Length: 110
Image (cartoon, rainbow, N blue to C red; front, side, top):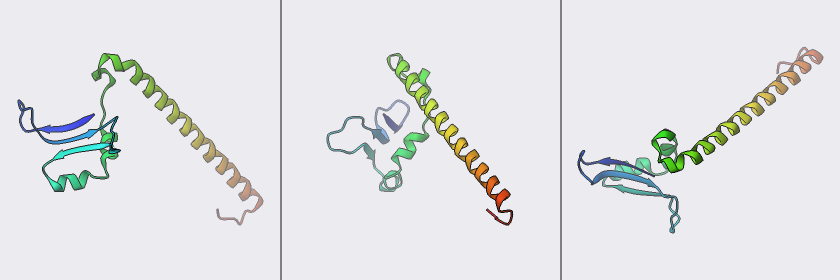
């Protein structure tokens, strides 16, 4: 996956490109093509944050990949719902324990 800025609308050259490489022999996940050291220094270490902020509709992806992407997204949503349910359960349990403590020890602040 690549993020790039073209020099002009009809140009094939890029002023900037940040690529996320799926298979890379030298161990680097990201590849930069940029003529600005300042831009590169700001992006370095923040690549994951940049790619996580990008939203691409599944309908805009190639047809051959849509089914797998829908399944992947559905699994992500199920996992998020499960984590949220666990968080709510822990919160309710803490509230119950606190209520019991307050009944037994009314002078207890927290």
